[in-house]
Image (cartoon, rainbow, N blue to C red):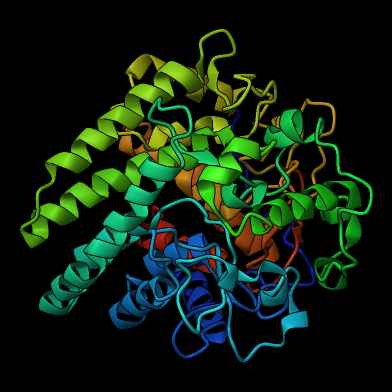
Length: 459
């Protein structure tokens, strides 16, 4: 591992430098308060004006340190948008926000076409990584009002079970124990090179796309966002799902995009362990959840681990083809508490390698979302190189779980240094720490709170 450097040495002149952890914590709480709508939190006031699925899980974890009531409400309001089959949509739309404030909005998704959509709640038609059982458990673990937190778990537990049963029942498309995603947006890492090997072969028929305006380009530099070519593929896949009325059985039979990935499955496994703990707390049976976690563990090792590459890879569920790219998702199975030590060692070796550790520059930050030496690496473009605090946080939690505190400390320190350098940006350059995307981004604030309070920096 390269020598630790002073990330604050060249702080951005356009932002204040915080004087220490207390100021960082206070600023993070201000961001969450600014983005609070009264019952839930938006990712940002500009580009993301609705409630997002895994954003709310990250936000609830951050809030759980100082606002039990709002942390609980964040998840309960999100689950008001859950479909009757257990699917938790990736967006629950705010009815007071105009449809054209975000694309694709409610008129595009037409969630009412699905038999199980909740009445009077417009949502998207796809899901995101199921971090919510983990978030609910952590709210309980640091609750000030323990009886209310227990009641909260009792209310949410059946919905969490339904969420996991939907994924295990409707998205295990090959029967191997892995959950498949049907759209890059379901991964949460929309524009990752991990999907290129599938998307590059996607053919969009002439006339298949409607006219639309990309709202993300209104709020961000187009050179930092997905290309128009990539975005057309995203829109086409969403339309294909809508046109079969969000019927998973029909979609899985026809869809050109069915991907079993390490990130989604590692989070599913990690939250399944949390679901077992919740069951024990409220007097339920943890054994089915433990069995599901073991099945996911075995499947990830059997299907997604590449011994030759020394990393976990995404797999096309239809063809069996594996992603050749090294991306941030390779590290996510560190969330598995039973990951074999030799595999942990190899992942740490990859993390410390020049592929993800830019030690050739004096100022640098980890962990880039894409191999620094790969063709197509871009330190500014969405998920194709920048550092994101949510993926840093997931890897940080995984490393700490396996006792790799030396490496975890550097990842956690980069989280704080990036915010100190460029504020609560959506994502950051791994070289100079410049911030991109939305400002005052909620999960950047929430997860920095968790990083600072779970393991306070040394004095």
